[in-house]
Amino acid sequence: MSLLPLDDLPRAPAALVRSPVTARLARRALTLFPLVLLAGWAVVDWHAVRDGTARLASADPRWLPALVLLTCLGWVNAAWVRQGAVPERLPAGPLLASQFAAGAANHVLPASIGAHAVTLRFLQTHGIPLARATASLALYSLVKPIAKTLVLLVFPVFFPGVLMLSQLVPGQRTLILITTVAATGASTVCVLVTVVRPLQRPVFGFVRTALTDARILHTRPSRVLALWGGAAVSPVLQATTIAAVGASLGLQLSWAQVVFAFLAASTAAGAVPAPGGIGPVDAALVFALVGYGTPLDLATATVIGYRVLTVWLPLLPGMLVLTALVHRKVL
Image 1 (cartoon, helix red, strand yellow):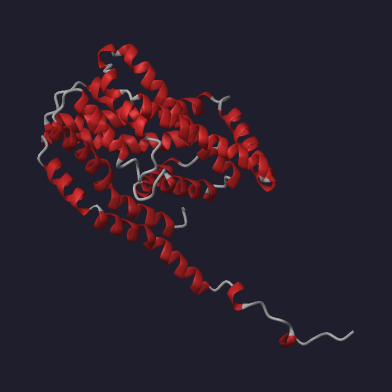
Image 2 (cartoon, rainbow, N blue to C red):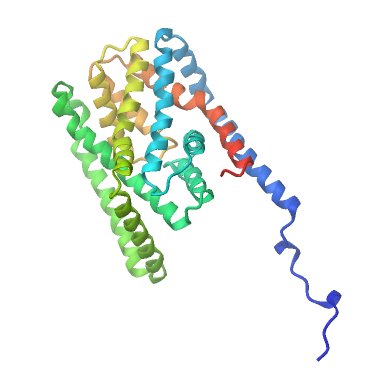
């Protein structure tokens, strides 16, 4: 049997050969992509950015250190919760940087897709398999609304004066709509898994992985505290930042009233997929503050000032950190 010369052997298609130039261009494109998203977002929402910055500039400057501290604590708490959803110990510095970058990505893509994508990539680069990293995101996404709802239910026990059910609780039609949407979504998923057999194996495998990791995590008190404690602290910390912004602008409501207004508004409108919750949650929060007797213009200024402080001002630094993490192959 004769052998063909090497030159006569069939060659792999050029598209299948990984070129160093192509890989370098792809990484450069990924590096620039966050900045392109930021530029597009700023163009679309330029008037809100300009007006909000002007409103925040008129605030009492004595509140500025507290506002900066509360904003930074929000990123620290986000990293703490993410650690609580993973059995392995993650490096604190890179984890905090990833959550700062994830916060920026979260505000340009709806339904927390940006933050989850950044965190998923971070977990994978630190040796966590895709299935377990995805299970961690699912556990994080499940715990957050449960913890927020528990805080919402318990909060009036300690602060009974905050209850204003006629102004803050959604009407009957809204409750029926929310229940119908939730039931329809759950039923659709069950039908798809039952009918489409190829989905059953990956779905059941994912559920097994998620349940196994959840069981392991809940045998470790430090992880339970980080996951559930951080998830419960998160909305209270956000609401405290809003209360501080409002106080700097002359808002007369108490801390407890602002916290309960935020909990009620974010719980009612949080199911609507919007970038970082911007839009539905903001409108619901303004409505809740007005329900407590706040003038509409002051309630609007408070919410816009909060968004400027926690979204627009950190957005460029967050995108730069995201770019640096991609460039250094941390993501």
